[in-house]
Image: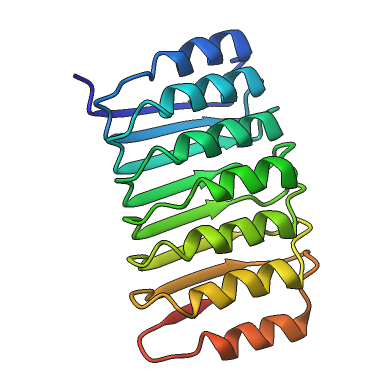
Length: 213
């Protein structure tokens, strides 16, 4: 019974044939802790969809580190992974890195919607250098409203199309989370205005909450 797995593939010639086979091999219902890092390879949506199908069967997952960066993945992968996350009701810690991909709001929205995880305490979501925008942020805000145990949030969204409406949705929810102690928000080269950032800082200002912009 495989309960914990760690695998890193960086700067290789891995393409979808190998990536799909690798992802299909992670169909392990007993898996509770997965650290999978695939960076700077040629894998695309066939790998992402296969990974989503496998992870959807891992309902005991409590810790997930998933890095799919500098790849050819796009919305189909985001949708598949979002569907998989919906099965992870026991997830307490998640790091999802999907930056430098072809992800847009269609896949970003699905991915963010899958983070409706009531036991989640620590979320690190990195979507920079993608085409995600406000629909993704709104979906993330809606998901986080169910994460009443959340203590730490890292959101890296530099070089995206995120704007004030999406940012406001996220912040309105964060202000209601009682255990939230640490927030990091990276929003360089987005459509989020200076006025919005100033309002965010003011709204989230409370004793015991550390905020890093």
